Image 1 (cartoon, rainbow, N blue to C red):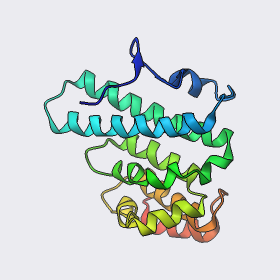
Image 2 (tube, rainbow, N blue to C red):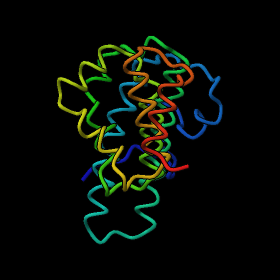
Image 3 (tube, rainbow, N blue to C red):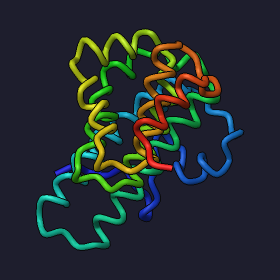
Length: 187
């Protein structure tokens, strides 16, 4: 079983309390690269634990704690990348692309899927990440987020991620992207 790095039930990585970091996004990190790498290591363990708990007969409280940790970690990844844009081309991203698309599996709640896709939208501006997504055959998993049984929020985020990947930078959606969204999303 995965050993969660907590101190008094509060998620902490590299000496940084994740909830505090997310609430104080302007707090500077001593070593953002190391923190970024460790965020993905812990996220990997937490998502595996979440899937394990869902497949078993886990208590609702345990599932809530792990689900909350996963959301905090996705948010922290977005925040650290927003602080240090060089992390968009960090080799950790392509190695962990599976975490983004695995979160689209039905076992994950929609709010976890939205958090993961929102984070992917922030980091998807890297050419290396787009190539890794294609080379690792993860694109079909991402495109599964466009299925009719998905919510509008999920479908819009998938289109935003694809737009960011294609354009290599984050920007407001173009009119063609808005038209594409309208064909996939209900109004």
